[in-house]
Amino acid sequence: MDNSKRIGTSAESKEDMLKRIETAVTNGSDVLSAEQIEEVTLLCMKVTIDPEAYLDTLRTRMLEDVTNPQLVADVYLRELLTLQERAGSLPESTDTAVATRASGDLMGELSQVIDALRKAIDEAQS
Image (cartoon, rainbow, N blue to C red):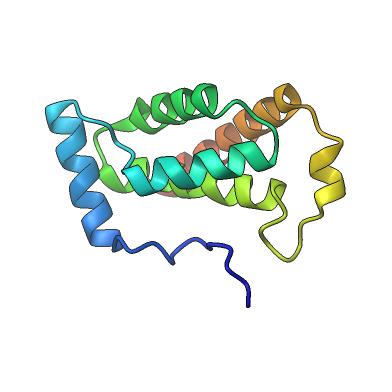
């Protein structure tokens, strides 16, 4: 049986996640839940990325557009999907590609992908 987590299998519903993010932004608490931190940390360790640095970057990116909790949540979900692909947690991924990629390269790639996605979202919304 496959025990790896997939996006959307979290115990937290999308509605609860959005409420938690909105509350976190309002009162200055962490936008990531303990479960999200644990999941990201485990994936980072699997792909040999420093979890603390990655989590700090993720939080910063999530808080770039705090006017819309859905956009904040979307940043997390995209980052998680990318990490899962790199970690080989998704069927179309390979562990070999992950093993040959340096953590700095991965962070650079993530940044480029996120910027491209943001641009596409902005264009779609205008």
